[in-house]
Image 1 (tube, rainbow, N blue to C red):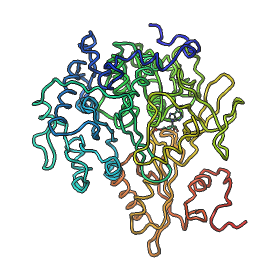
Image 2 (cartoon, rainbow, N blue to C red):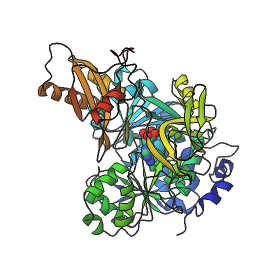
Image 3 (cartoon, rainbow, N blue to C red):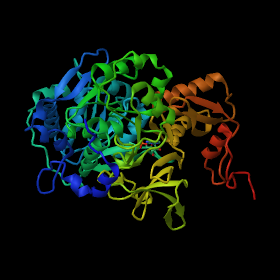
Image 4 (tube, rainbow, N blue to C red):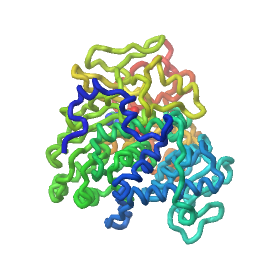
Length: 572
Ligand code: AMP
């Protein structure tokens, strides 16, 4: 099968977003809807009978196939449930669920009804969930009974916005204050006229973390579907009917853009596995489901590598045609391992919540440079820049490190941080979006990731704001100060480490450490809570009182301490 993008340079020189817009169906008069592209547009074609979701339940590997037609009907039912409940287009619907088919129907039904969908990660503890609910004020929360009882029930009545909690797992009885959405969907009509939206109407709100303050809600519009569709086709090389497996959780942006939208607009069959990572199961899925396209992440790849070559060699993985990776730096050895053991290199690509879709990538038809993120997606202009007093200056010389910046104008660019206008404005300098990542570009135009320009932590591919973790630690009566950093980890990339100083009278002993760990896990969830806590007499602060995480990190890792002139106690 030939690659959709056989010649990168030529394709880039002929590419325009207007032309890419022709590849989506649209709804007439310049109006569109992401869900229309994902589902409705296929209803008069042979794609309607194709499997959209091949679902593997946690305790079974016998697939349950859901066709495009059936998924469309289920999404229509969800849209009708919203309509019947009086939920208005433009209102927000949050999803907090494991990978189960009705979550996908809920996402698409929400979009059909013109509401804005926000995914939440099901491994979050109650605190990150509550915070995101308070910021985004959804009218509806879609979740499961277990997650509701464990993480939501205690506080949801105190929030003023949530009018309906809809439970989408099969229930005997919905707890008080919730509705059995499965039953409501079963009873609702399977017909719904998907709303035609303006390209700039909001569609998705994705939360991400910064260095300071609360999580930021990055707002995306329906026009984003042009990027999703185009990158699915030309970067991930989706051909209609391909078996595609994106292992990212739909609680994050990758699991939405490439775990729901792009595969459906491109008419592929997506494998959805409810279970957590398990190397043997994963190899069996690749083999038994005959996966052709596999989009996964460095942490998972490193875990597979650690388990050796015997397992993959015992499986027939000959259906694989293209493998890609995203979310954190992919070590060059992992690319080479893929080639040696699985017969294909992993194609690293780079993007972030704010960009909504892949921006820099390696391509099927382009030489892969192990360790490089690749070249900009056609239609995307990327550069390396240094900050100056009045903005930025692009760096032309190759191999110089600077901030990775992207020229405004791709359709899936975020259109705002919810309620944080200034923060949004500050993410741009003139026509350039400032990514906060450091990178260099080599003489041939390949981009190489250097690191983050701020203190956010990437652990197992999840972006963690140190401030969120520090805030929860500070709630404990014993804690005087907390500073949270990421420390390198062979498998997870980074893990969260907290430095804590105690109030007088509290002994820094093992019992207290355990108590703090326990509290953090309970409130933040295992994906966010610190893996290590270390007690310190005091923490380095700037004279204005801010904990110097950079210095904590440098000291922890034995790195140069850099500029410490603002350190409290230092007097030049
Ligand atoms: P998120 O917004 O959670 O998707 O995280 C985006 C951040 O993840 C980027 O700003 C990078 O710091 C990191 N990231 C994503 N993809 C890559 C990659 N291919 N290589 C290195 N870092 C990456």
